[in-house]
Length: 346
Image 1 (cartoon, rainbow, N blue to C red):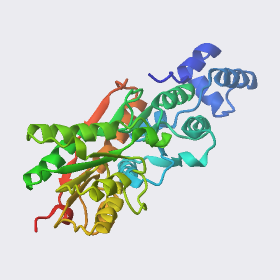
Image 2: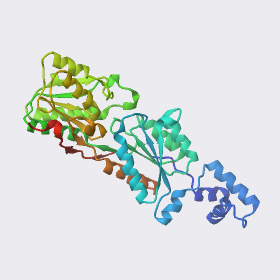
Image 3: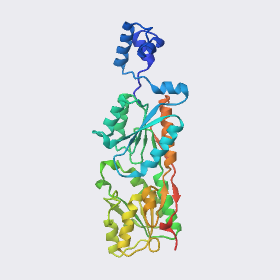
Image 4: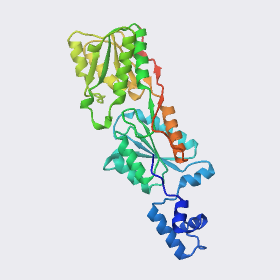
């Protein structure tokens, strides 16, 4: 729970004057004595009181401004989430400040502490690697915070996420319904990923969903689960574990990529072995981000509900700003299958 911010009532009680006097003193009204004004401002400073734009906006039925912290990476899955959040905020008359983590030394915690001097009323943290540090930083300056994240095992914030396990299960079921039985999964070698990937929960959940679908269909393919340390390298020419598999003469019917950005190097690896997609091998992904439309053929994938995620995060944050004590839990939204040519039957 965020640390309570000092209110006008706190300042009035400590200064021994009425609420109206505090308001007039802080606004420099001439009908308050210089002595009282000085005492009120001294108390306000000691208590860490900041005039709340939100309180004023609530009386008007809207807020003033929110801040969004975005990742320090090239992976653009969060961009449509940000656009949705901006739309939801704009419809409510809220200004949305965007703060890329890479613009501040010391990471997201330092960035948040700098928000004490910014007229913002709350924080949306997108895909932060350390929720506990974000929670502590927001508590120190009394700002409510909501996360959009599917990488963290231990939650410290109300968190909006996608149902990765169910989505991966649905994708594998789709491939099985297409008649595929030897389905490879190109995942990630978690121990080789940078800190920006967080704890990798979504990677584990997508693999778990994939395995659940195979098990339900009576299919065993543990030898086709491939862990790749370069999973974030869209420009890689080949995927080494897949290259080794194909060189050994094992050709899967289909490949499920843990994320869409894995698909381009998977397609290049298949092409290097003279294999055509989807005629020889079907390929699918997860996220429906930019890579899904830039590949040839375009990628069948599970689409994250970006619009709903951004809007839900803004709604949760507005509720927290209004005083609701939000529980620390996941708000999980479903993914949707988007079928394109990469799994099309010939």
